[in-house]
Image: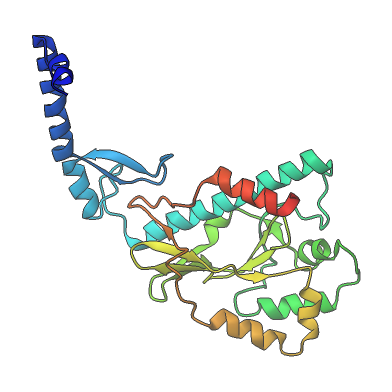
Length: 269
């Protein structure tokens, strides 16, 4: 040990180098910190002590301002919708590559859709049941016919319909939006499918799943009452699974590649 110490400090140059290194470490410990930044690969960035203190006061450092809560949550919702769509498209690309089928069974491209203009948050379930009862085809393409031809759904940019309700601490859409996904979880997303939780996190309530068991649902005479009751029921945040938001509204969605691989393994084995 004594010999090792001697070798490390046996010249003037080594002594100066070690002194500089120790001073640098002390300065770093005293004046450099890390803060969340979920736009970065590892979810954080290194900042000065000054910026660290600003972040803790709520500042988005890159914009040098504090975002109001509505803007903060809206940015997080935008990012969530974008990430969800990206995962679904990657799964579909894999399907085409491995199975060689360019056409989806229900003829609906992956994406976000709005229904006909007369369908709103109050009547969507009635309109959906009416459309289902009046359909004239019974095949895999029933979903496509129902959504595209009867309900007149058109693909849209979902960001223009985002709604944030700070009083109810929910977010979603100002009108029913249909999300056509890769595998079975085609969903109607309403104004409360995202819960705004404590400590600037969000929890995702999946919305109302459609197809392929929609027929069984509508055979139940209590379906409308049950669905509306579920819609109005105030969900509670599950902080174990909620997603964090940084001060600039970036969402800690998770490792995209890992999520894709897990979904791919589940769907394709």
